[in-house]
Image (cartoon, rainbow, N blue to C red; front, side, top):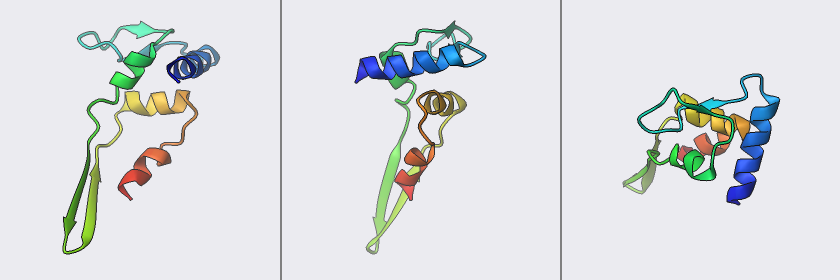
Amino acid sequence: MLTLLEFQVRRSLKQDHQRQLAGLYVGNPQRKTSRPTAELLLAAFKEIILLLIEVKNQVYAHLTTLCPLQQRIFTLLSFPTTIYTQLAG
């Protein structure tokens, strides 16, 4: 799965006019790469929180909004952001 993740993102970056992805490196957000690793891609999502609260048999959900880097990764993977946003639905 990790290899497939890397392959898809790298292939999409090659087809993209920008050809590089910035923001994956902690402490150096301007650093760009055309060959991101699966570990770096997944680490970009580590701050996501899904909070579920039940009050009087009613469940309320709060989901962290995707940052631009996370949205870009979704685009490179050809994933619609609705697969993420519907989690809080």
